[in-house]
Image (cartoon, rainbow, N blue to C red; front, side):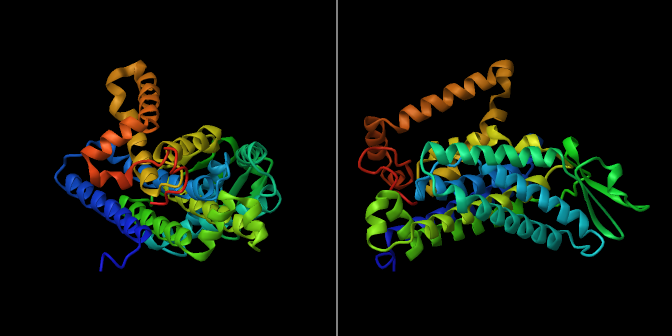
Amino acid sequence: MAKRLSKASLNGFLNYGLVILAFLVVEMMRSSGQISNSLNGQLVPICAYVCMAVSLNLTVGVLGELSLGHAGFMGVGAFSGVVAAVSLTNIIPSNGLRLLLSILIGGLLAGAAGFLVGVPVLRLRGDYLAIVTLAFGEIIKNIVNCLYIGVDSAGLHVSMTNSTALGLAEGGKVIMNGPMGATGVPKLSSFTAGFLLVLFTLFIVQNLVQSRAGRAIMAIRDNRIAAESVGIGITRYKLTAFITSAMLAGMSGALFAMNYSTIVAKKFDFNTSILVLVFVVLGGMGNIRGSIIAATVLTILPEMLRAFSDYRMLVYAIVLIVIMLATNNQKFRSLLSRALPHLREGLPAHAAGKGGSTHE
């Protein structure tokens, strides 16, 4: 049976297996009390960042376009998910179902934002695309800082002035309060929900990469002119990858937001986009498994370095540089591959000759 499976399919099953194994191990450690409160509180953010890294890898690694506005899509999903969750409180009492609907709504609105941005922006390439997507992320942050949303028996009320201008009836609730962000957010997210979202993200991305559309997207990345010459619709397939990536980022944003009682727009600024890009680059361009591992390790690492107090971020930066140098070193990679042959498929594909063609 294994011989009949393609290399891409085997790598896909390995990715699912890695995530499921990690989930089972963490659950056993939680049940036995072997996980600290600090690490336990990071489980949902880790899942959200893994989804972010895998989705951004679809744009940066598979499509080959540099996007610096991924946190903007995460923000769209986060705040729209929170508004949906609070608005549906009296209609849907089930927390699980409300979380699911909020994540779906966050993903749909982020996908719509991806379409609106992608139609004009994807005609650009390289640095120009990066600058415009960066501007989009900052625009979203500033819009959220000026947005006031409340809900009462009459429905949603929106204002760009202040919370008083919402005109809420008695018993109404302010959901988004301008620069103060969303307050009183229902903490619906759980590690199990995060685990399921990671599996869903892997399913969408891996099946897209292995499909006909995925092969067309990679053809555009490898040689745009040649792809266009054989009739591949450049704009169509670039939009497919970009919108899918935005939708998954929005879903992870909704999951992330409902892990906290308060969430502000600053959390989804340029720094978050760069952080997710670091996950992708460090894990390997186009390497799905590498993105999962990098997002997990680099999210946990700052907490593990708290013993270094004021120097922990300096140590964190040094560790990043050392890892990047090591994974780009041919001798180090070949030595590690000989020592651990089975790890070869999971190593980031930075070396010459592999480029961005690894889609594990």
